[in-house]
Each structure stands twice: as structure tokens, then as C-alpha cells.
Amino acid sequence: MDIKALVNTTSKAWAMPILANLHAGVAGRQAPLLAATGASRTAFAQSMDHLISIGLLERNPGHGHPLRPEFRLTPRGVSAAAIAHRIQTVTGEEDRDLLRRSWTLPVLTAIHRPSHFNDIKRNLQTITDRALSQSLKAMEGRNWVQRHVDSAARPPRPTYLAVNTGELISRVTASEVRFLG
View 1 (spheres, rainbow, N blue to C red):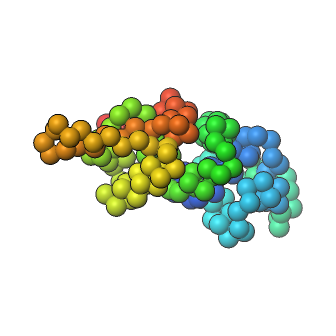
View 2 (cartoon, helix red, strand yellow):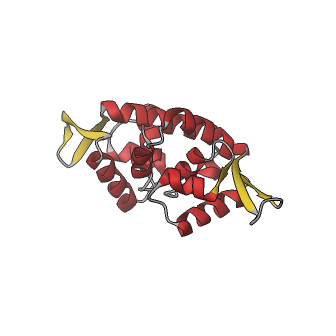
């Protein structure tokens, strides 16, 4: 998976939990997936539509009722679901809200080794300064990211590194995600 695909997948809050639950064997129908993720119906439907539009999920032809369709992973979706499941296994239930934010996983992927703000931004290309700053602060508040300021440099430059749960997630994603250019 490349970084653009990860950014696109995580742009909907419930996409990764849906993929992780499908990988874990939850039936590919709306009711079991909805119960397993805990998402609202509207957010769940938007995430399902998004996963179908980016080619990770498809309706299972010949199965399910027209009003209660069944879904299955595409070949690309199988690998994305495996990554989502591995992420879910290294995190606790209390961490899931932060994981549902759009930029959390891409930023953690970018800081699997010490990185400066501009290096992270360069790797993620489409992220804004504000979104990156808010994401780093949220993860720093949970102790997923450590910020170290090099006061000897002029001007002082902060370096960011994934630690604790953030490091576990970063190890999973960094080994699976390729950066472009």
C-alpha cells in the first residue's frame, strides 16, 4: 500500500475499523459490522460507500437480499484489512477514538524514525500545517509521540518520534506502507 492509499482510506473515520472487523471474520452484512464497530448508521454508510468507491470493498454478487446486501473484500482490500487488523490488535479500546481521526495513521507512519515537521509534511504531501500540528499535539497528549527540541540548532528545531502505543502502530504501518517520490 502506498501513503496516498493510506491517507485516502483513513479519510473516513470508520473505514479502518470496518476493514479490521472483516479481516477478523465478522460477517460482511450491515448489522453485524455495525454492531462490531459501534459506528452510527450514517457514518457507517459513508465509510462503506467510501471503501467501495476506492476499491477495497465490493457487494458480494448473488448473496444477500437487495435491502440487506452482503459485502466482501477485494484483493486490494484483503491486504488493507490485514494492516487494519494488525493495528487494531496492538491498540486498546480507549485508543480507537484517536485512530479514527483522519491524519493519525499517516502521521504515525511518517514518524517511525525521528523526523522534523517539514519532513513529515513532505512525506504526506496533502496535509496542511494546521492538520499536522493538531495531529501531533493530540498524539503528544496521549503520549504516542515524543517531541524533542534541539536547542543547539539555530533556530531551535523540534524532532518528533513515535513512542509507546504510537511506536507499536508505527512499526505495523511503516513496514507495509511505501512513501512516494
